[in-house]
Image (cartoon, rainbow, N blue to C red; front, top):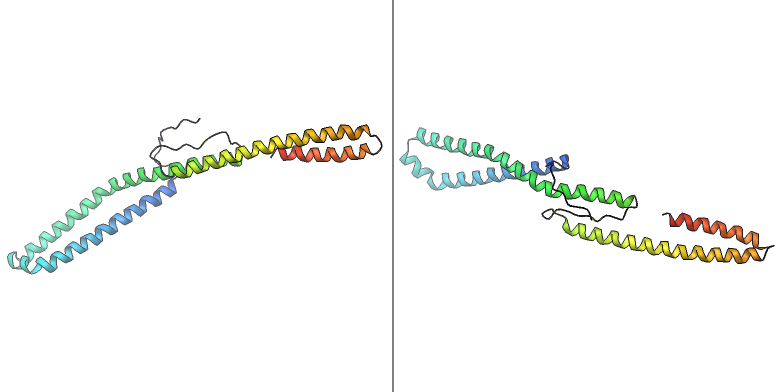
Length: 190
């Protein structure tokens, strides 16, 4: 059984993860812009006239500029945190995809000996269970096929012995049986 190791690299599939983080950043900035616009719009409609009466026009614009600057700075300072969170979350998807890719390559090469294991918090756990079940079935079917081919090969060898005992026609039939045996051996190696 393969031991599950802790990933030491945050970038497993760089292009995928960068696209994922970019989408998170775009979503974050779009949400901030929409929220900010909604809050400002509501504030100006509800409080604009009242605030204009209390504060001189220049002071009110200065307050709005300061609020805008604070919001922009907070967005800029929050961006690295969002990038880090996006990197960790994308790692939970990119890591399993990487492991599944390696696993499928081994299966393609005919190695059914390993099971696909993912970390506990990784996504795609259900897929790993289904893939392990599929590989177990493929391995079982391959073993059954191999046993059946061995049985057929044994029966053909027995027939070959019996045919060779009949001499004149036996040699031609034995040659045909050898051809069938060669095909069985080639099937067994699949």
